[in-house]
Amino acid sequence: MNGTFYCNKCGAPNPAEAQFCSRCGASVRPVAAAPVYVTQTGGAPMPIMAGVVPRYGGFWIRVVAAIIDWILIRILIFPIAALFGGIGWIGSMTSPFPHAGMGLHLFGGGITVALAIAGNWLYEAFLLSSSYQATLGKMIFGMRVTDLYGNRISFARATGRHFAKIISGLFFCIGFIMVGFTERKQGLHDMIAGTLVPIR
Image 1 (cartoon, helix red, strand yellow):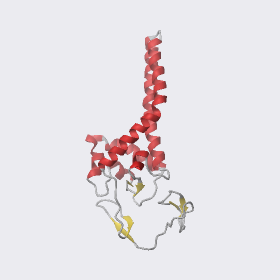
Image 2 (cartoon, helix red, strand yellow; image 1 turned 30 degrees about the horizontal axis):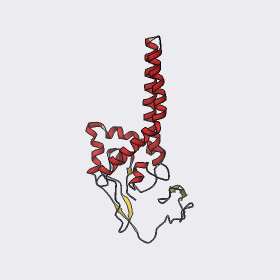
Image 3 (cartoon, one colour; image 1 turned 135 degrees about the vertical axis):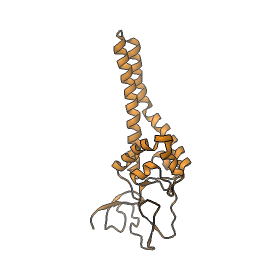
Image 4 (cartoon, one colour; image 1 turned 90 degrees about the vertical axis):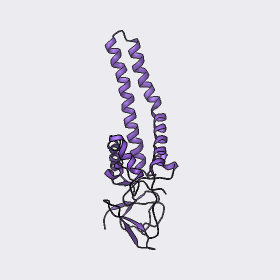
C-alpha cells in the first residue's frame, strides 16, 4: 500500500506499511484491540481504540489559549510594527508637503496591519502543521489540532482553518460559540477544515 502518514507521538512522516515510527520507534499499528468507529451526527466516522474515550478542548480553555497566542504574537511583531509606524508618524509630522506626510503615515499603518495579519497566519499555520500540532497557547493546556482521524494536519489545512475563523466570527461569533455545544467540541472553522482539538 502506497502513501505516507504521520506518527501520533512525534509527528514524523512514515510509509503506510510501517509498523513502528522511524523517528521515535512508537508502534503505529496497534493490534491489542480492534478499532471502534464513533460517529457524530452529520460527521465522518472517527476510529478510536476500544475503551479509550477522547477528550476535546472546550470553549473557555480555547478562549484562554487564544488570548495567550494573541499576546505572544503582538510581542513578536511589536518592534517591527513600531518601527514602520514610527517612520510613518515622523514623516507625517515633518514633511513640508501635507499629502506626502499623510501618505507616509498611511504607509506605516498599512505595514503594521499587514504584519499583524501575516504574523497571525504564519504563527498558527506553521505550529499546527509542525510536529507540535499546537500553538504555544494550546500547548500550555495540553491541546493539539488533528484531522478527524487523529493525524497531523498539513500547512494548507492549517491555513484554511485559520482563515475559516473569519466565517466563525460572523453573526455574533456563533461559529466559535459552537465549540461549547457540538459533540466533539468543534467550532465552525473546525468543521470547515475537518479538524479536532483533542487534549493529550
